[in-house]
Amino acid sequence: MNNSEQLRIVSLLPSATEIVASLGLTDALVGRSHECDYPPEVQNLPVCTQTRINSGKPSAVIHQDVTQLLQSALSIYEVKLDALEQLQPTHILTQDQCDVCAVSVAEVEKAIAKLINSQPQIISLKPQHLADVWTDIQTVGKALNVSPESTIENLEARVKICEQKTQSLTSEDRPKVLCIEWTDPLMVAANWVPEMVKIAGGEPLFCVIGQPSPQLTWESIINSNPDIIIFMPCGFNLDRTHQEAMPLTQRPEWQNLHAVQTGRVYITDGNAYFNRPGPRLAESVEILADILHPEIFQYGYKDRAWKPL
Image (cartoon, rainbow, N blue to C red; front, side, top):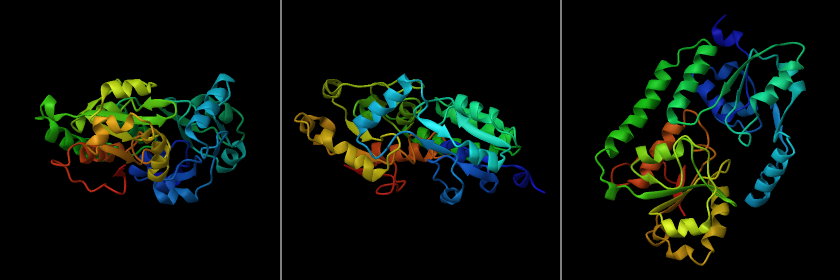
């Protein structure tokens, strides 16, 4: 019997599902969250969570619903106890990074305390920098008894290639980049995103590497006058991101922004890439490199992962 046959992994976090897959353990996954959708074959697995939020609503309403739930000390997500009981997992992957992103470790601990047929090991992830993501892969590999070294080396090498190619850029060659993670209220993508922008040869605006995403005023955008604006709303694909970006383009001052006048406003699939702290952050760095410096990089992600607005 090999290792993957003994393991019964439930991942309650899309990035963790991708980490498990990158370690060659897709076959050991027996359950997933309602948001885990990659690699495609995991979509057939039993779903072990549900959300109290309707993600089809407008951004402002989603934000309001999330705020009300958190103020009521209610989790946004619920663990399906009956599904876990049936699956009898040996390991459950979750996170302690963001109450809005996925099921919290506290919710999972509460659910596990009620299980009768199994007492799975919890693996909780809390990345804030790129290096934390590589450490998370190490942690998951160790817990699941597989070697993560080649996976991590490959991801680090891809990021390093971008970094080396942009190292010699002067400050004049590094555009001011605004990455928008939410449109109503306006929020800037932070944590690992500003770090990736720097690696790809840009200067991130309004955010600090490793810190949570701050809210932003429209006046701040006008005053900073970014060279490049990139929309990467949390949880939204390209089509939905396009839809969310449109109200901002209707504002009277929009046309005066430097990024707009030079045609350097872009939409991305934030859900698949930037918002998901797993292996595809290496691709996210390459996507940013494509966008920021097309004279240096041609990775070919255009129209699949990003588009000009």
